[in-house]
Image 1 (tube, helix red, strand yellow):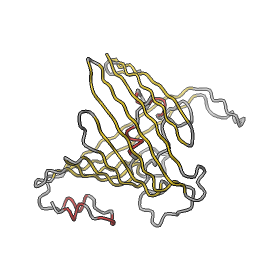
Image 2: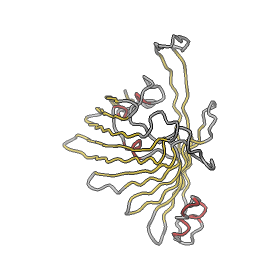
Image 3: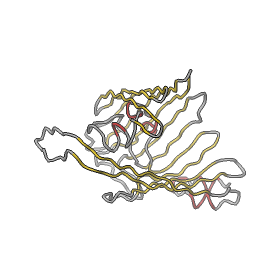
Length: 275
C-alpha cells in the first residue's frame, strides 16, 4: 500500500478512491446495514412557558441506512475503509448523519470525518442500560436535559482509539470548530461555537464470576468563539455498568459549564425482548 495515498494530509481526500487504487490492496467489501425504529409515545408535559399544545400521544420513526466499505492491505495488514450513514426519515433535511474514514492496525484506529468525539462515544451511564428506541436519552427521551457532557456531535474531526490492552482502552479526538461539518468552506470564527475542542476518554471492560463490568471516565476542554454562551468550557464525568443474569444496572455522573447530572438505569433481557 502507498501510504502517500492513504494519508493525503491537509486535502482530507485520503478516502476510499485513493485507498482502493492501491495495487497491493485486498478485496474491498461493501456492506449495507442500518436500523428502523418505530414507537408510540405517551406522556404529559408541563411547560413553564404556558404552552400546553404538546400531544399526549403520537407515533414516530427513526431510521438510517449505513454503507460500510472495508478492506485489508495485503502487504502491511492494515485495515481501512469508510462509513456513510444516510438519514431516511421523511422530515429530515440533512441527507447524512455521519461520514468518516479510518485506518487501523496494531497501533489502534485513526478516524477522520463527521463522527462523534471520543468523550461521547466512550461515555457510560444510565443510558447504557437502554432498550427499545434508546432508553432515557434515545428517540423517546424523558426530558430535554443532557445525559453526558457537552460534545462536538458530528462536527468534522480527527479521532484516535488505542488498542484494547487487558480490557483498557484510551481515546482522544480534536475538533477545530464544533459548528463545522461536511463540505462547508471557510467556517466562521465568531459565531458562538466552541473551537479547538479536545475530547478524551478511558474505558475498561471485563468479566468476573459471571458479572460483566464496564467503566469509563471522559472529559473535554474547548475555547469559546466570540458570542459563545459559555465562553471557554471544560467538563469531566464517568460511569459504570454491571450485567448479571440478563439484567444490566448502569449509572453515571457528568459535570460541565452547562449542568451537573446524575443518571441511572436498569434493563432486563428476556429472550428477544428487553425492558
